[in-house]
Amino acid sequence: MRSNVLYILLFLIVFTNGVNAQLNSYKYIIVPKRFEAFDATNKYQSSTLMKYYFTENGFNAVYDDALPKDLANERCLGLVADIIDTSSLFTTKVIITLKDCNNLEIFRSEEGTSKSKEYDKSYREALQNAFVSFAGMKYTYEPEPKEEEVEEPATVVISFKDDVKKVDEATKEHVLEQKATKEEQVYKSVEPKPTNIVQGENKEALNTQVPSDLLYAQPTANGYQLVDSTPKVVLKLEETSMENVFMTDFQGHNAVVFEKDGKWLLEYSENGEKVQKELNIKF
Image 1 (cartoon, rainbow, N blue to C red):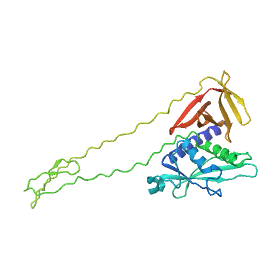
Image 2: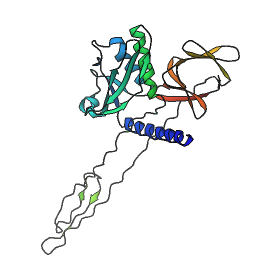
Image 3: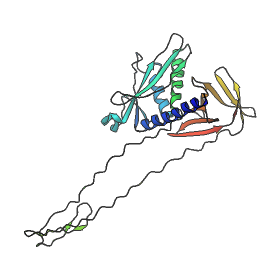
Image 4: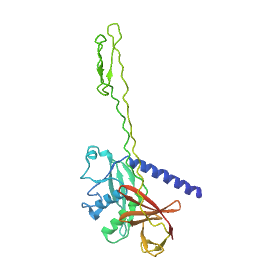
């Protein structure tokens, strides 16, 4: 039984890394102003919420009617987001998919659910829960490397009898070309062009102060509230459809609290960077 659990965990780690690598090759997430699942533009604030949550998770999300110039010229730079509505009579259920420019599905989220009776609230909660699938993704756009074209230096062949030096148009250096046959004599000497490649530096996550003392988890109607020794409520955790994964609000940011390797982590996006901090929680 233990070996089966380890195998499943290993599979999930490999699968997640593979999905991350796939998504990193796309520069944009295209959010429609109207989804096929709904009969009106931005119904239940689906488009604005979708764009907001993608941005909060570090993606460059744009509306389908406001594409940047490079994306308008090359649609394969982006993935198109969609909502699959699988709601039943008493439960709102949504799934988020991402498709490439060939309409091939690249990613599918977990099903987000809500039992709220108010449509606006229920779809907001269901979308928020579906976005748990994007928690922990360290998305960074990585464009595919392009082969550099090597241009031959522009030289002019001259007769040996003229004995004239030409200037290479690319390097502005003098190049002497001569032939050495019975009819013509020319010699060619071309120096290689130096190339400097500068690599970018990785940015470190911003250090934001979070509670470091022991936090006590107190049950609430929708999850838990974390209280320090003052006592003071530090964070409010809202349950999701995934075990040991909670939605919360931290300093004005939509955040996720989840358990990993026996540790509780708080994760959110700030200025396009993923910030992850460890919490000391006692349930």
